[in-house]
Length: 266
Image 1: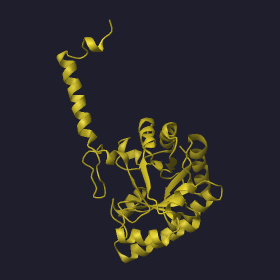
Image 2: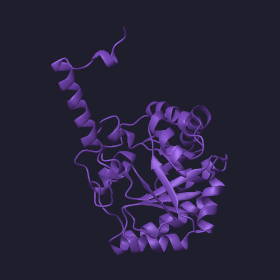
Image 3: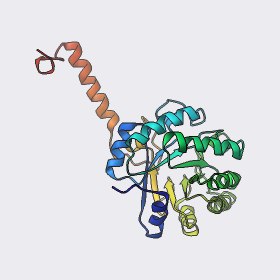
Image 4: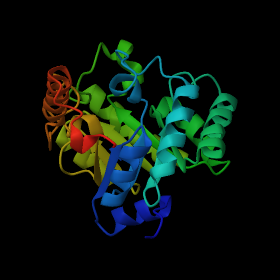
């Protein structure tokens, strides 16, 4: 199957084909999602929440990202592989951004990076694209900014926020981003941004009018415990299935029914 590229993703907007993106953090999930025909695999810094057990994404390091992107790369044969730049790996200076983005591209096999921010990060996006590192932007609710935002809240409901997000969207496109994630913004605003931009918009909690959609794989599969924001649709309840299987294993071992003759060597 043909490898998906940045140009393919941009062409999908032009051809009005919906883009599908999911997160992956390890080889087995990357292999399965890739075999399903997903367009983009994102190794998100959400690994801090769903894999590493942190309360938010802020503690995630470059070392964490490198480790997980390498694993995903081994299972990603067809999808475009995008890696998040973690907190403080790009905000300090363009030099830091270029160095750390370059590490992800050179040493992990990522084919693009994602960073959070709009107008305030336009110069960083421009610095990366000028050295041919594809950048996916991310505006709206930006998890690395939760302290400023006062938590995980919908952005763009107020007119001042709406105007700010419109300006952010225009800024990241002008800076050279090949696509932009819109997180937790009103559907009407996401539609307006999608119509204004020539680059694809990928929504998460941003309604049906974006050029594509993304979810965290653990949320989609019901592996996130009680964390169920409004925008998440659970397509399976694997946590219940896993717990049932483990409980049955515990019972079999303690009762002496496993391993039996069928599962032993003679």
